[in-house]
Image 1 (cartoon, rainbow, N blue to C red):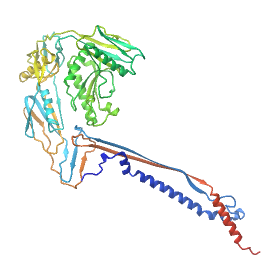
Image 2 (image 1 turned 180 degrees about the vertical axis):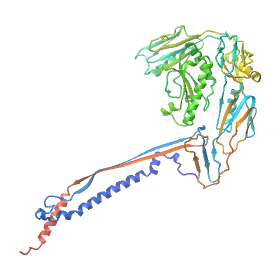
Image 3 (image 1 turned 180 degrees about the horizontal axis):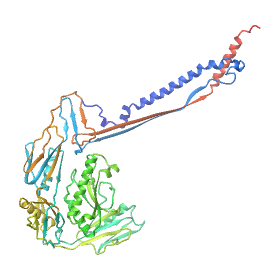
Image 4 (image 1 turned 60 degrees about the vertical axis):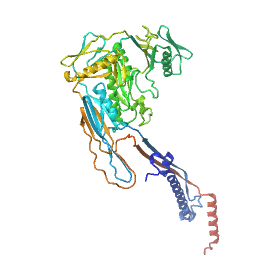
Length: 596
């Protein structure tokens, strides 16, 4: 039978009632009253000593000398009781993989414990497939890494049987050359080539450090016939929002205040030049992030500015896991910037803040939040609000105003970059030690149902990666595409799909063709015998579990109590003394006259 009053559903009043706080206070009050009664009886017991004639006092009693029995009373008595209750109840679909976990739930019969078990599937080539409990899933993707991501998505929940499925890849540098070596599009880095759009483009970054004085405005001139006056606002953030909004209403430009995402608070750090949002538990770049970071990388390459890259997570899963996931995300963004020509020396540091920034701001634990799952490109040593302006049909003029590109404080453009139209002049890429030549083609293509327009950076990159991978067995090079970037690595490098399950049953796992199971799931131990008909839940100490049908519950109660009482001596009541004197007088009159 289930508990009638589960602790996680109790109100604070019910908690205090169960703790018997009221009974405790009542008992202490009665104890003080009993102590007062004992003091009064003790005072009455001393009356005989005060009425006894004493030879040393000339035959007089203490009472006759004006002394009386002391009566002790509590002048005041303070009782304080404090209780500190901490309760956390969470329900989520994520699972932390920080260590071994034992989780079991039983009700009146034997149940196998749910143990966190891990497996690994390694992809080396395509085609490849994975079979789970007799159901075969084929890997689909333009390259091995894309296929691995696709498989992980299909094998993980809710579609698959694994609570967590994520990809890790190793990339070993390989030799490759761009033909001709004087080509300006694509650009070549140590590990990749990046194709740029052949059309003209421009980008500007507006720094906002203050709002104009009351009843005044500030004018931003972007191009001929494209200017806007922004009125003063209550604070810098509202003013920066107004600048971005009014530029967007001009048309011909796209403006974003990246440090102001919808649905989140501002993270701690410098001014944001670019950001990438991620899916839950993932660190692979989404298409929207690829497009945004491409232009940011191009501007950084031309400008030479120094940046920091910082990764964040939401508050699902454990702190250690989130710290690592945040670092993975930051590394993916930093790698993309370098692949797009940003010099390694321009990236000052790559770090993770995990969930710490959101936790410090009171974000709810175990709640997924898309805006928290991010990595930011931060202008080093800047805490200013930055509005990034991209051309969208209209180019920025040579010197937009206010111009702060050279020096000076205040609001204005601190970065302005113009990119002239540069057609793709690279004709081929020679890969591997054999210098096998693979032609560059801008033919329109389709990637997973997405049409890539002819002569677009994405089409050039897709065709090149596809053709390099087609000859991997001969030249030993593997290619991976992200947007308009193609990265090269050793064809023998493994791409690993990590799988984690909480299932209490054995799962049959196998792989075929270019995939293999390199770490099998542990077998389930024999089921325990039943012990009682009450529900039993056990969670290993030190681990939290976020599972689709499980609860994460944490409770602590600390109590303190203190009593302070002040006792003072007060004269006996006048009526009491009068009664004693009357009694003594009657006793004296009744006594016989002594014989001479």
